[in-house]
Length: 120
Image 1 (cartoon, helix red, strand yellow):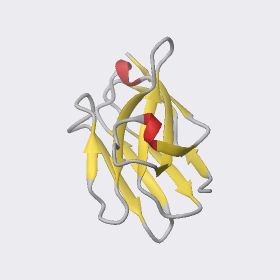
Image 2 (tube, one colour):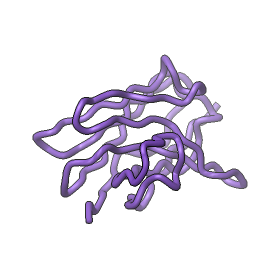
Image 3 (cartoon, one colour):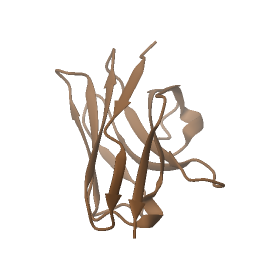
């Protein structure tokens, strides 16, 4: 297993920034997903291991950046120019079973989630 521990959520005004972290006990391709109240969980970003190729949802391209620190087995999600629509619980995921980074069904392990709230 690759237990995942997330941190970094919080309350921020529109236009602000937050950085989420996800510490894993092993190395794995990892993804970030989010779920807003009343909505289904949706893909945000993913990074492959090894290789470091990144993937983004269209809604966050140019604003969010996913990166990894292999020495720390930690993945980060830098979120800039935040909008109220970005408000959600953010989850990191690991343990890719099939090479479809965009689907939450592809991942075996999930973090506990961290709340991100963007006020207008």
